[in-house]
Image (tube, rainbow over all chains, first blue to last red; front, top):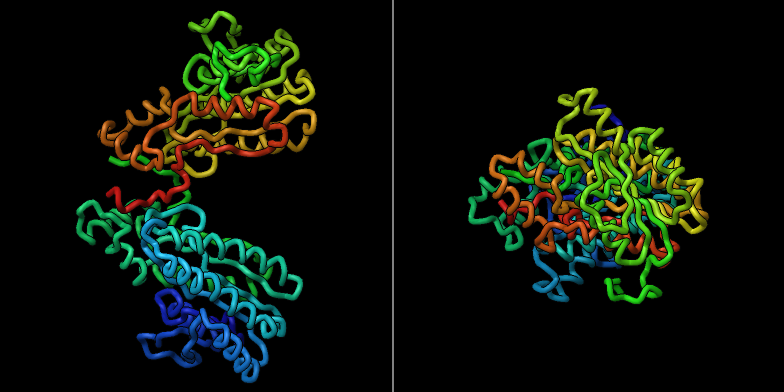
Length: 259
Length: 256
């Protein structure tokens, strides 16, 4: 514990998920007070300084009341992490309008609502940081993830817009764009319809995926939490409006022949 | 509208324009030479070695673009131009650790210094509204494994493209085309490195949304547009022509 965000307050949407939970724990270990906001409770017992609150990112009333309550308790908010997200593993042909809207409701509306209602509290911080979850899929496409790719492109553009609009108010806004990270979402991708798999076992598929990365591994939630911590800390005080790709070098390569 | 030998001269898109295309002996350069001729341009090309079997109306100059004096001589000989295509390029398939000084001189000499030499010598002789088209590469943005000097040389080309567009507009426009995998001798040389070239070729095609490699004519089509007045507002940009390959993640589990 190095207290890199000692005394700061943080609100993490999707905080009970794979990456979100790693962020909550890391923030708490570095001295922050953390709200883990999620529709489900975390699987682990929360450490000291992490409080789970039930929060549906698609519900405007929930956003309004969550930040009103926070204002009464904390007065200001230093860190907002918009980590809630879902992934529909389909092409546009197979995606229903309902699934499409659900993807945008969670991945984009959720970010919009939390950010909108957090703004008055973020302005009261001595230096606020908003960290949105984009994806390397917002730059290049994985097959069979059409709606997901589209929502992440929207997140990237929204990140730049928010950085531009609210930078003068002392609020930095960045997006973290993970590649393949070992989460339940990734395991679902391996077993999902979109992955194909060429008849291989999941273990062989996982190894093949590792081998394509220059680092020969995919990331862990802690790898992503490390970057989020830095962006949340005062060390990153000049970092804003950027899209931070964390993918083990995957997208630094062009398509390459194997065999 | 695409010009053919039957297109009336007035409807050809490059009618009345004079072009220099470096490295027109084969591959992409040759495809651009032929497309420019079809569209009514007067075309000069150059390269190391004797004149290849080119259409009669196309002039050939035997020069090495890496040699400043030879490029300056060529520029004096051919006079005013509307179009310069810096296509001449070489590749060496090595990592940084494997590359020798001779590899550096060869790759950076042709791909970087050659482009600089030609731009510097030709720019003062370009007519108002001229167009410089550099052949960059998708490898100038993201790395092809084992192609360190080539990748770096193409990043140089991209940087120079922006500088020329900024410094020499509005008189001259400058853009780069970034080809993906085009069926040329260079592509064959790449596949020859694979353990199983036929299987590697099949795998690579599957990574292209259009399910084929490019042909020199695919690049030439963009070169004609960038050379024509239709592209009069395009400058300082990179035009990737790769059959959709770089729009896809390099990791596609469906292929494994």
